[in-house]
Image (cartoon, rainbow, N blue to C red; front, side, top):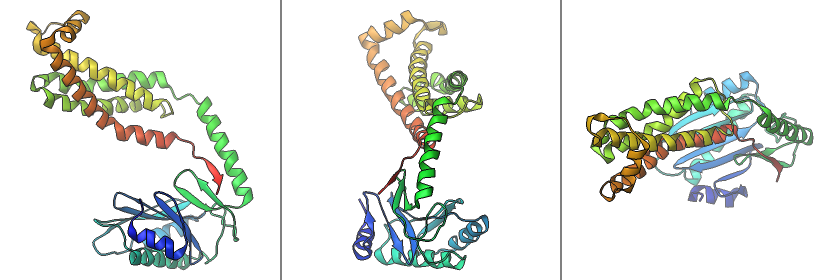
Length: 301
Protein backbone atom coordinates (compact mmCIF):
# COMPACT_ATOMS: atom_id res chain seq x y z
CA UNK A 1 0.00 0.00 0.00
CA UNK A 2 1.45 3.35 -1.04
CA UNK A 3 1.79 6.13 1.50
CA UNK A 4 -0.43 9.21 1.33
CA UNK A 5 2.44 11.29 -0.03
CA UNK A 6 3.01 8.98 -3.01
CA UNK A 7 -0.72 8.54 -3.60
CA UNK A 8 -1.15 12.30 -3.86
CA UNK A 9 1.88 12.53 -6.14
CA UNK A 10 0.43 9.89 -8.48
CA UNK A 11 -2.86 11.78 -8.76
CA UNK A 12 -1.13 15.11 -9.32
CA UNK A 13 1.57 14.00 -11.76
CA UNK A 14 -0.39 11.18 -13.45
CA UNK A 15 2.30 8.57 -12.89
CA UNK A 16 1.80 4.83 -13.33
CA UNK A 17 1.08 3.01 -10.06
CA UNK A 18 1.57 -0.58 -8.96
CA UNK A 19 1.06 -2.10 -5.50
CA UNK A 20 4.44 -1.10 -4.08
CA UNK A 21 5.91 1.46 -6.48
CA UNK A 22 5.21 4.20 -8.98
CA UNK A 23 7.06 5.25 -12.11
CA UNK A 24 6.94 8.07 -14.60
CA UNK A 25 8.60 11.11 -16.12
CA UNK A 26 9.76 14.13 -14.16
CA UNK A 27 11.46 17.05 -15.90
CA UNK A 28 12.47 14.85 -18.80
CA UNK A 29 13.89 11.99 -16.73
CA UNK A 30 12.36 8.60 -15.96
CA UNK A 31 12.14 7.51 -12.31
CA UNK A 32 11.00 4.48 -10.34
CA UNK A 33 9.91 5.18 -6.75
CA UNK A 34 9.33 2.29 -4.33
CA UNK A 35 8.38 2.04 -0.65
CA UNK A 36 9.13 -0.71 1.83
CA UNK A 37 9.16 -0.55 5.63
CA UNK A 38 9.70 3.23 5.97
CA UNK A 39 12.34 3.11 3.21
CA UNK A 40 11.72 5.03 -0.02
CA UNK A 41 13.93 4.56 -3.08
CA UNK A 42 14.25 6.89 -6.06
CA UNK A 43 15.87 5.14 -9.02
CA UNK A 44 16.67 6.12 -12.57
CA UNK A 45 17.93 3.70 -15.24
CA UNK A 46 20.55 5.03 -17.63
CA UNK A 47 23.82 3.80 -19.23
CA UNK A 48 26.13 5.95 -17.09
CA UNK A 49 29.81 6.32 -17.84
CA UNK A 50 32.14 5.66 -14.92
CA UNK A 51 32.82 9.41 -14.55
CA UNK A 52 29.11 10.25 -14.61
CA UNK A 53 28.34 7.57 -12.04
CA UNK A 54 31.11 8.74 -9.72
CA UNK A 55 30.06 12.39 -9.96
CA UNK A 56 26.36 11.67 -9.51
CA UNK A 57 26.99 9.42 -6.52
CA UNK A 58 29.01 12.14 -4.78
CA UNK A 59 26.33 14.74 -5.48
CA UNK A 60 23.43 12.57 -4.32
CA UNK A 61 25.28 11.67 -1.13
CA UNK A 62 24.95 15.35 -0.17
CA UNK A 63 21.16 15.04 -0.08
CA UNK A 64 19.92 16.26 3.29
CA UNK A 65 16.40 15.81 4.63
CA UNK A 66 15.38 16.61 8.23
CA UNK A 67 15.31 13.52 10.49
CA UNK A 68 16.07 11.14 7.61
CA UNK A 69 19.02 8.99 6.58
CA UNK A 70 20.09 8.69 2.96
CA UNK A 71 22.17 6.17 1.02
CA UNK A 72 23.19 6.00 -2.64
CA UNK A 73 23.65 2.69 -4.47
CA UNK A 74 24.45 2.55 -8.17
CA UNK A 75 26.20 0.87 -11.06
CA UNK A 76 26.71 1.71 -14.71
CA UNK A 77 23.12 0.73 -15.54
CA UNK A 78 21.14 2.43 -12.76
CA UNK A 79 21.46 4.53 -9.62
CA UNK A 80 19.13 4.79 -6.64
CA UNK A 81 18.79 7.18 -3.71
CA UNK A 82 17.41 5.49 -0.58
CA UNK A 83 15.74 7.61 2.10
CA UNK A 84 14.74 6.22 5.50
CA UNK A 85 12.82 7.81 8.35
CA UNK A 86 10.23 7.13 11.02
CA UNK A 87 7.44 8.36 8.74
CA UNK A 88 6.87 7.97 4.97
CA UNK A 89 7.82 10.90 2.74
CA UNK A 90 5.25 13.64 2.34
CA UNK A 91 4.11 14.88 -1.05
CA UNK A 92 6.30 17.97 -0.70
CA UNK A 93 9.35 15.87 0.18
CA UNK A 94 8.83 13.64 -2.87
CA UNK A 95 8.76 16.75 -5.07
CA UNK A 96 11.90 18.15 -3.42
CA UNK A 97 13.85 14.91 -3.91
CA UNK A 98 12.85 14.62 -7.58
CA UNK A 99 13.76 18.26 -8.23
CA UNK A 100 17.17 17.72 -6.65
CA UNK A 101 17.72 14.39 -8.46
CA UNK A 102 16.77 15.88 -11.85
CA UNK A 103 19.01 18.91 -11.27
CA UNK A 104 21.98 16.67 -10.46
CA UNK A 105 21.39 14.58 -13.58
CA UNK A 106 21.48 17.77 -15.64
CA UNK A 107 24.60 18.97 -13.81
CA UNK A 108 26.63 15.93 -14.89
CA UNK A 109 25.69 16.42 -18.54
CA UNK A 110 22.69 14.13 -19.00
CA UNK A 111 20.28 16.16 -21.13
CA UNK A 112 16.69 16.78 -20.10
CA UNK A 113 15.07 14.44 -22.57
CA UNK A 114 13.61 10.96 -22.55
CA UNK A 115 15.86 8.23 -23.85
CA UNK A 116 16.34 4.48 -23.92
CA UNK A 117 17.28 3.38 -20.43
CA UNK A 118 19.60 0.73 -21.87
CA UNK A 119 21.65 2.48 -24.56
CA UNK A 120 20.85 6.16 -23.94
CA UNK A 121 19.47 6.78 -27.43
CA UNK A 122 17.31 9.96 -27.32
CA UNK A 123 13.61 9.55 -28.04
CA UNK A 124 10.32 8.40 -26.58
CA UNK A 125 10.21 4.60 -26.47
CA UNK A 126 7.73 2.01 -25.17
CA UNK A 127 7.96 1.10 -21.49
CA UNK A 128 9.64 -2.17 -20.56
CA UNK A 129 9.62 -3.97 -17.22
CA UNK A 130 12.76 -5.83 -16.14
CA UNK A 131 11.80 -8.10 -13.27
CA UNK A 132 9.45 -6.76 -10.60
CA UNK A 133 11.55 -3.70 -9.71
CA UNK A 134 12.64 -1.77 -12.82
CA UNK A 135 10.44 -0.01 -15.38
CA UNK A 136 11.95 2.27 -18.02
CA UNK A 137 11.70 3.24 -21.72
CA UNK A 138 13.57 0.87 -24.03
CA UNK A 139 14.24 1.01 -27.77
CA UNK A 140 13.42 -1.99 -29.94
CA UNK A 141 17.02 -3.19 -30.59
CA UNK A 142 17.84 -3.12 -26.85
CA UNK A 143 14.60 -4.90 -26.00
CA UNK A 144 15.34 -7.67 -28.51
CA UNK A 145 18.93 -8.01 -27.28
CA UNK A 146 17.71 -8.08 -23.67
CA UNK A 147 15.42 -11.02 -24.39
CA UNK A 148 18.30 -12.89 -26.06
CA UNK A 149 20.56 -12.21 -23.05
CA UNK A 150 17.94 -13.53 -20.61
CA UNK A 151 17.44 -16.70 -22.65
CA UNK A 152 21.20 -17.26 -22.63
CA UNK A 153 21.26 -16.74 -18.85
CA UNK A 154 18.52 -19.35 -18.39
CA UNK A 155 20.43 -21.80 -20.61
CA UNK A 156 23.59 -21.23 -18.58
CA UNK A 157 21.76 -21.97 -15.32
CA UNK A 158 20.34 -25.16 -16.79
CA UNK A 159 23.74 -26.47 -17.96
CA UNK A 160 26.17 -25.08 -15.40
CA UNK A 161 27.90 -27.36 -12.92
CA UNK A 162 27.39 -25.82 -9.49
CA UNK A 163 29.13 -28.70 -7.63
CA UNK A 164 26.05 -29.40 -5.52
CA UNK A 165 27.45 -32.66 -4.10
CA UNK A 166 30.58 -30.95 -2.83
CA UNK A 167 28.45 -28.14 -1.41
CA UNK A 168 26.13 -30.62 0.31
CA UNK A 169 29.06 -32.30 2.07
CA UNK A 170 30.39 -28.93 3.19
CA UNK A 171 26.94 -27.85 4.31
CA UNK A 172 26.54 -30.98 6.42
CA UNK A 173 29.90 -30.40 8.11
CA UNK A 174 29.14 -26.74 8.73
CA UNK A 175 25.72 -27.50 10.17
CA UNK A 176 27.16 -30.31 12.29
CA UNK A 177 29.63 -27.91 13.90
CA UNK A 178 26.80 -25.44 14.52
CA UNK A 179 24.82 -28.09 16.44
CA UNK A 180 27.49 -28.48 19.14
CA UNK A 181 26.36 -25.52 21.32
CA UNK A 182 22.76 -26.79 21.30
CA UNK A 183 23.83 -30.32 22.26
CA UNK A 184 25.95 -29.01 25.11
CA UNK A 185 23.15 -26.77 26.41
CA UNK A 186 20.20 -29.12 25.94
CA UNK A 187 19.62 -29.22 29.70
CA UNK A 188 18.44 -25.59 29.46
CA UNK A 189 15.38 -26.76 27.51
CA UNK A 190 13.80 -24.31 25.08
CA UNK A 191 16.58 -21.79 25.69
CA UNK A 192 19.07 -24.28 24.27
CA UNK A 193 16.81 -24.79 21.25
CA UNK A 194 17.24 -21.11 20.40
CA UNK A 195 20.80 -21.98 19.37
CA UNK A 196 19.33 -23.84 16.38
CA UNK A 197 19.23 -20.37 14.82
CA UNK A 198 22.86 -20.90 13.80
CA UNK A 199 22.45 -24.34 12.18
CA UNK A 200 21.21 -23.01 8.84
CA UNK A 201 23.89 -20.35 8.84
CA UNK A 202 26.50 -23.03 9.52
CA UNK A 203 25.15 -25.11 6.63
CA UNK A 204 25.41 -22.18 4.24
CA UNK A 205 28.90 -21.27 5.45
CA UNK A 206 30.08 -24.84 4.98
CA UNK A 207 28.51 -24.94 1.50
CA UNK A 208 30.34 -21.78 0.42
CA UNK A 209 33.70 -22.80 1.91
CA UNK A 210 33.85 -25.89 -0.32
CA UNK A 211 33.96 -23.64 -3.38
CA UNK A 212 30.58 -24.85 -4.64
CA UNK A 213 28.70 -22.20 -6.60
CA UNK A 214 25.36 -20.78 -5.52
CA UNK A 215 22.70 -22.17 -7.86
CA UNK A 216 18.91 -22.61 -8.11
CA UNK A 217 19.03 -25.84 -6.04
CA UNK A 218 21.11 -24.36 -3.23
CA UNK A 219 18.11 -23.18 -1.14
CA UNK A 220 16.60 -26.69 -1.13
CA UNK A 221 19.94 -28.19 -0.11
CA UNK A 222 20.36 -25.72 2.77
CA UNK A 223 16.77 -26.24 3.98
CA UNK A 224 17.11 -30.05 3.85
CA UNK A 225 20.44 -30.03 5.70
CA UNK A 226 19.04 -27.66 8.32
CA UNK A 227 15.97 -29.83 8.96
CA UNK A 228 17.94 -33.06 9.21
CA UNK A 229 20.59 -31.57 11.52
CA UNK A 230 17.98 -29.97 13.78
CA UNK A 231 16.37 -33.39 14.27
CA UNK A 232 19.75 -35.07 14.76
CA UNK A 233 21.00 -32.45 17.22
CA UNK A 234 17.83 -32.51 19.30
CA UNK A 235 17.72 -36.29 19.69
CA UNK A 236 21.46 -36.46 20.26
CA UNK A 237 21.23 -33.74 22.90
CA UNK A 238 18.41 -35.53 24.69
CA UNK A 239 20.47 -38.70 24.61
CA UNK A 240 23.38 -36.91 26.25
CA UNK A 241 21.12 -35.54 28.98
CA UNK A 242 19.02 -38.63 29.70
CA UNK A 243 21.19 -41.67 29.00
CA UNK A 244 23.48 -42.56 31.91
CA UNK A 245 27.17 -42.44 31.25
CA UNK A 246 26.69 -40.36 28.10
CA UNK A 247 26.38 -43.51 25.96
CA UNK A 248 26.17 -43.19 22.21
CA UNK A 249 22.91 -42.27 20.55
CA UNK A 250 20.99 -45.13 18.88
CA UNK A 251 17.86 -45.52 16.79
CA UNK A 252 16.39 -47.72 19.51
CA UNK A 253 16.78 -44.89 21.99
CA UNK A 254 15.21 -42.41 19.55
CA UNK A 255 12.19 -44.71 19.24
CA UNK A 256 12.01 -44.89 23.02
CA UNK A 257 12.01 -41.10 23.35
CA UNK A 258 9.28 -40.60 20.77
CA UNK A 259 6.96 -43.36 22.02
CA UNK A 260 7.25 -42.73 25.78
CA UNK A 261 4.45 -40.35 26.75
CA UNK A 262 6.41 -38.73 29.56
CA UNK A 263 9.24 -37.83 27.20
CA UNK A 264 7.50 -37.29 23.86
CA UNK A 265 6.22 -33.85 24.86
CA UNK A 266 9.76 -32.64 25.53
CA UNK A 267 10.94 -34.23 22.29
CA UNK A 268 8.31 -32.66 20.05
CA UNK A 269 8.26 -29.33 21.89
CA UNK A 270 12.00 -28.87 21.70
CA UNK A 271 12.06 -30.03 18.09
CA UNK A 272 9.35 -27.54 17.12
CA UNK A 273 11.26 -24.73 18.81
CA UNK A 274 14.48 -25.81 17.11
CA UNK A 275 12.88 -25.90 13.66
CA UNK A 276 11.29 -22.50 14.23
CA UNK A 277 14.50 -20.78 15.31
CA UNK A 278 16.51 -22.54 12.58
CA UNK A 279 13.95 -21.28 10.07
CA UNK A 280 14.45 -17.73 11.31
CA UNK A 281 18.19 -18.10 10.91
CA UNK A 282 18.05 -19.42 7.36
CA UNK A 283 15.14 -17.37 6.00
CA UNK A 284 17.13 -14.32 4.93
CA UNK A 285 19.83 -16.51 3.38
CA UNK A 286 17.27 -18.40 1.29
CA UNK A 287 15.59 -15.20 0.08
CA UNK A 288 18.94 -13.68 -0.90
CA UNK A 289 19.95 -16.82 -2.82
CA UNK A 290 16.64 -16.95 -4.66
CA UNK A 291 16.95 -13.31 -5.61
CA UNK A 292 20.56 -13.72 -6.77
CA UNK A 293 19.89 -16.81 -8.91
CA UNK A 294 16.54 -15.80 -10.40
CA UNK A 295 16.59 -14.77 -14.06
CA UNK A 296 14.37 -11.68 -14.40
CA UNK A 297 11.67 -11.37 -17.02
CA UNK A 298 11.65 -8.63 -19.65
CA UNK A 299 8.33 -7.53 -21.12
CA UNK A 300 6.63 -4.57 -22.71
CA UNK A 301 4.02 -2.68 -20.71
